[in-house]
Image 1: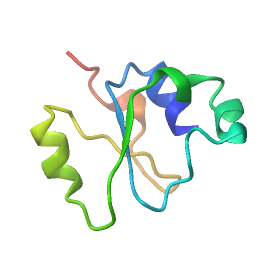
Image 2: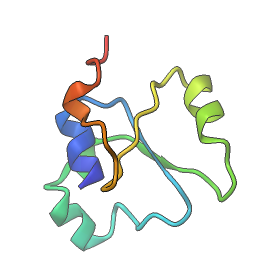
Image 3: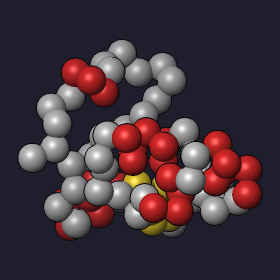
Image 4: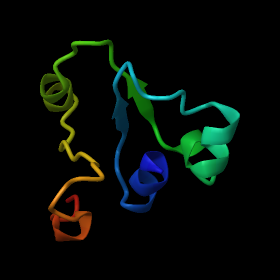
Length: 79
C-alpha cells in the first residue's frame, strides 16, 4: 500500500527499512497494483540515518503510519 500511495501522490522515491517486506514479492506487487514496478525505492540497512539519506538525495521526508494524526492531504504538495 505504501508504494501505491507513493505513486498516487507523486513521490520521487520510497525508502524502506531493513524490516520492510520485499516490494518485489509477488503478493506485494499485486497489492501495490503494479506501483512496486514503477516507483523507485531503496532499502536502507538497519540503523541507517533516514533523514540524512533523504537530505543527501534532496528528498522531502514523509512517513506513513496507521496511528498518525496528520493526513497526507494536509501536507503541501511537492514543488
